[in-house]
Image (cartoon, rainbow, N blue to C red):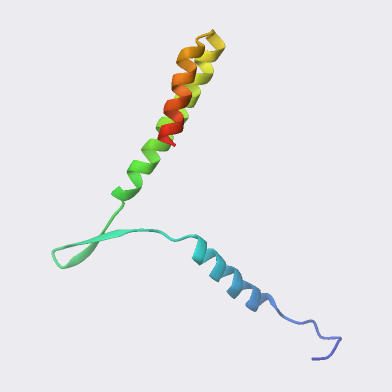
Length: 85
């Protein structure tokens, strides 16, 4: 190429960045068949989200308990949050 012409690396960069993104964002989806059709089940994502939400609530409760002076309850709530997360 000539020095005056700008090199177009955007398509090569898009390909490499899409490969990186697709390798990072893997999704595990269980598929069932019902009446000969594939049915995608999203139930597998419910449990991890519920555990994370419970950990957030336990951490919030620990902050409230510590602010009121109940340090034993706050320590137990932190331990519960640690187990949940």
